[in-house]
Amino acid sequence: MHPESSRSSLIQTAPLLPPFKQSCNTPLADYIDQMNDAIIRNALYRKILRRNISCDSTLVVDEMGLLHGNFRADIAVVNGHLAGYEIKSDEDNLRRLDKQASAYNSVFDRVNIVVGQKHAKPVLKKVPNWWGVLVAHEGKRGGISFETVRRGRFNHAVDPIAVAHLLWRNEVVSLLETHNVKRKVLRSPRNELYVVLAQLIPLRELRCHVRTCLRRRTEWRHP
Figure (cartoon, rainbow, N blue to C red):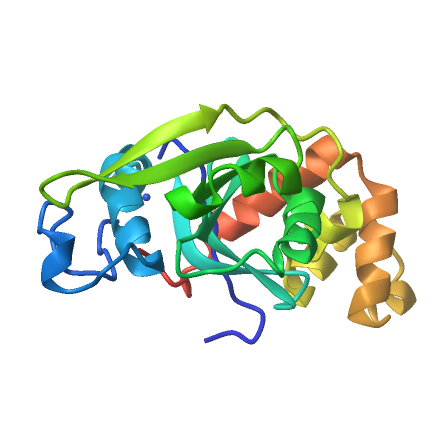
């Protein structure tokens, strides 16, 4: 796998291979006392992201690296926008959420956080008000359903340099070459190239190019 590979997701469109093989309707009490990340993730694939997963023009990725692997988005969806899903089950805590949210905010056009009932109220105070908030509920027969507590909105404050960081070096160089950047500059360290790229092209064009590059890659961790 390429050292810089990672993958992406959004609430509308990529291949169904859930990491947790139990059916969402299997009584949870048979194998666990409370919903964990894998159970919530599996239900998300089946109930929220099924259309995205089956759409050829949409990429859905597990554990997409952000800021060169310093953070990871639980699920990322790439189509006409770049969207991220963060999962916090009742087994998780919220201690790292502030830093994780900062990374999500810098890159994603839309973000949804999916939580167990334990975190339903606390999370509303910890994430930006443009984030969507979904709460996972366990039914009487063990099935998982999702309640939309807050609908997400578009992020108008992504960081162009952070968006550029989603590209591999060869992808950055290729794009800079189309803008006639001097070869001496193209040999600069990777982090400097990201700055050059972010300053050279409009954010709208950069975001579009990044989404195209992500969808072209084949070395992804798919759901």
